[in-house]
Image 1 (spheres, one colour):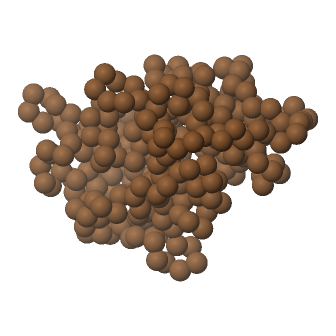
Image 2 (cartoon, one colour):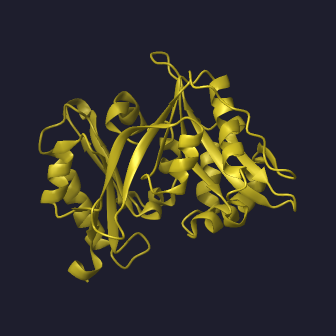
Length: 294
């Protein structure tokens, strides 16, 4: 599954950070995963109902049959209906798609997914941002009394999970999920950062992912990054992000990507302030199930 995404990175939002998403507890139930194979058992596509993200993740080989994307959405639709009301279910599912992927957009709309870009007060869209290695990296020191350091391995996973849940106001992150990321072969402990407040509590986190292979220059991705609400607007986020970028550049990453909400989002301003620019617009498509299938 990972190899299919890495073979065609331009078609996918999550590439370098895919190990993070492949570690989620959605994979505890194999029925949440769909695989499509071609001649010679070559993997042509996969899909996952990512319950923690309320999202349908999938990847498709560019040479797959034209109707395969529609079949993926039909499988996801059937699975979403079957698991409604179970721990794997959600009343609403989202799909993120690059604005350039017009064929996928057509299929999503035919499958009764609705674009959220212009729905009024709750409009939602995203951007894929990129930062070149040639962009100078400023040394943003943390505020007085704060320190930025590496996560202390599995011994600090529980404290990280408590922080993650507080930052995102969600209990989707679990100790098991976070611990699995530390055991992935792609995981690099020198790219897993936390910020510590003056009182000793964890205040922020920034996990960086690095993709290295023999055919392409190393690339990086930020996922996830968060700052506890009481410590925001002090420069903690900029300090931990700049340290992550510095470390990625030490690994010769020629570019770093991040996906975030649109221009109205505070995170967008943070990334823009350290040299990220919009690479492509990302549309968010939504389909509700509770009313339709309850």
